[in-house]
Image (cartoon, rainbow, N blue to C red; front, side):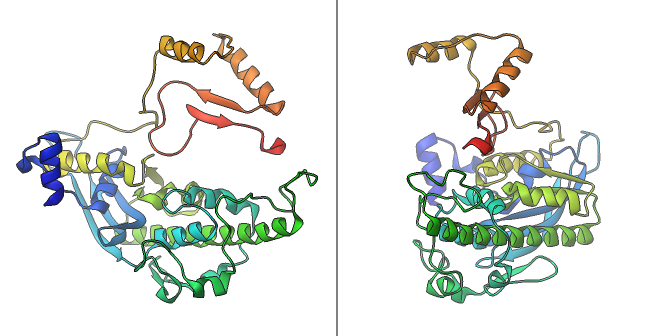
Length: 356
């Protein structure tokens, strides 16, 4: 009621025109009604939305105005708070020194520097069944009663002291310049432990996603899968799902997290409530803002930057590669910005990691 009145006051919309779509239905719609499929299994996995933390179901889409097919999304299985894959991952995000709901991708990025040596320890704080359902041992967590902390001292007894936020990260194998002024062998060894923990929670998450997907496939029998929710932004897990999963086709909308919920709510109302036929397929991720060449040049000149105009794309590509190989850091700005949190070449910073 408060949200409705606020929308009416701030935007001036009649409350009769305001519709609410449940969190995981919004996730599901953002994937299904942007996909190219007529029917698909649905899997949504995140931290929590309302009280649901994961859901499985099926969806159908009407592409022809005269078709008797109904646009529908039916979520038939759900996992409920406080048992959550996303919140489990977020607890380790905080433990590893990153911000919850912001730094999960950094855990995914830290994982390749380690080995999954702490899987057995993780399985002491979470039970996972063959369907991918998780049951957290709440004796080790505090997110269900605290707004400040996600894990407690019993968690620390298993995994040791947490990594200090914003501390430098390097291991014995990943810091080639041992004469660096900040180099410290003890820190490097400790960071290796943190990298191993990151690799372990990443592995456990991948296994959970695969089990959920296999269960969804067995439940629905569909060859297509649409997936959404914050966990669907874990591209490493998605890669395993594509390679090892039971589905022939997998579609994940680029803004799979909560930012894509607005899109999903709008698509749900348009297609399910109004039963309008499908017309649009999201075939790429470049739906962000773009600026004219004149605006770009105005910004460059305003900053007093040196520049060179190169119209031949092959020559430009060669120069970019050459600079990267020379150890330079190159920013890429072209076309429209990416829709979603992943840098995919239009707003990207690229470098040779061997020289960092």
